[in-house]
Amino acid sequence: MSELNELYQQVILDHNKNPRNFREIENADRTAEGNNPLCGDQLKLYLRLNGEIIEDISFIGSGCAISKASASMMTQAVKGKSIKEAEKLFEEFHKMVTGKMDVEVEENHLGKLKVFAGVLEFPARVKCASLSWHTLRAALNNEKTASTE
Ligand code: ZN
Image (cartoon, rainbow, N blue to C red):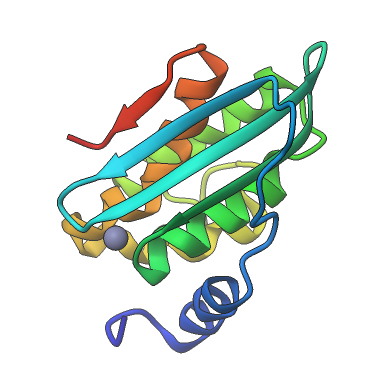
């Protein structure tokens, strides 16, 4: 964490300490479990859909600060969005953390999620930051598990 700049650290630490949408959803339409064995991050995602809209989304689990903060901010980012919009965000997020898009130059919808651009320099952390997104994609594809391996 000391490598990331201070502002990014604050946002990530805040979401790690007080993760948003950190709960189970009873009668969820979709659930999926994500696993990042490299770091030991584990999470379970719950989704309630209303047609094409992600009406509610939540997660539980344990892991490092980056994985937890990323899951917290991912749920905030896609809640109320359509499945298509969420997939678009996943694409942009993935391009950002793998260095295929410069979020300061290219147009994107990432907003606050840009704090994770810093993980690009730390390949092991990319998986921590991406885990919740891979799990979201699994849930939307009706798959039960996602792994970063
Ligand atoms: Zn991790």
